[in-house]
Amino acid sequence: MKHLILLVILSFSLSLFSNNDTTSGDWCLFNFKVKNKGKLYFYWGYNRDAYTRSDISFKGEGFNFTINDVKAYDRQTPFGWAAYFLPENLTIPQTNTKFGYFINDHISINFGVDHMKYVAQQFQVLSVTGDINTGGAYDGTYENDEITMARDFLKFEHSDGLNYVNSEINYWHSLVSWKNKIILQGLGGAGVGFILPKTNSTLLGLDRYDDFQIAGYGLDIKYGLNLRFWDYFFIQSEVKGGFIHMPNIQPTMRKSDKANQHFFFGEYTLLFGFNVPLLKQKKEFRTTITPSF
Image 1: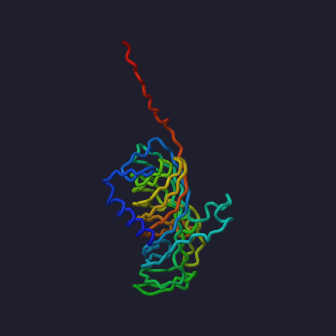
Image 2 (image 1 turned 45 degrees about the horizontal axis):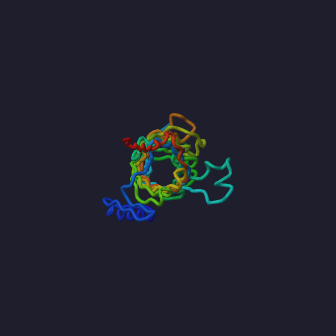
Image 3 (image 1 turned 180 degrees about the vertical axis):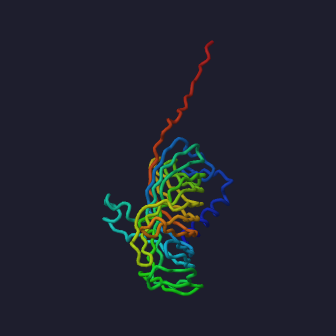
């Protein structure tokens, strides 16, 4: 949240002067031209996430019930050389990967994956409504009854990836430039995509399920800052808010068993990337005509 507040304050402060084109020596502020058109870009980075509480409904053979106001959190891997930089471990932390292309100097489109993680808090006390009849300890009819989310009742994680596969459109605007070599740009965007979680779930003592599935869709809006170095490399940070709806979660090994949930999320990212110019820049030629007498 503090990162979101800082970015909003910085963006607002800069926008107060955005109608002025200021140049001072090697520095340019606002409204200067940045040549983005025709550039392909790629970035890789890391995220932290927060989720609103969610009602989760379960329906299948022997059960039809809903647990209310489920708390969940992300699970970022503690920083370490092996966990973050060895090739075999690159997908273990919460990561972001995107390819993008600038249609013109101000608009880009991208495609990639926000690899988040969603972990329902174990042993929280929940309100349950519905019926359970599996021949186990939790059989009964519930009417807003309290139950502790013990492991023999439910373990529910999208911890091998709450994978938001999405495409975004972004609008870029110039902020600060030093000798046209170090450039700070702001970007705002919106995206849409599908959710491909790898759900790790154990429900009512049934066999554990842990596999990929297309479970639903997501929407997002974002704002970020991009600091570019010598036209090729950049560091980027974004704050993102969105909505996820997953009506097709498979919580057990039986394909007929389903779970349904939706929630809002907030995401903060730190990204590292590079640009590849695909269009050759036009060179300016000056022709001097000497009159003859």
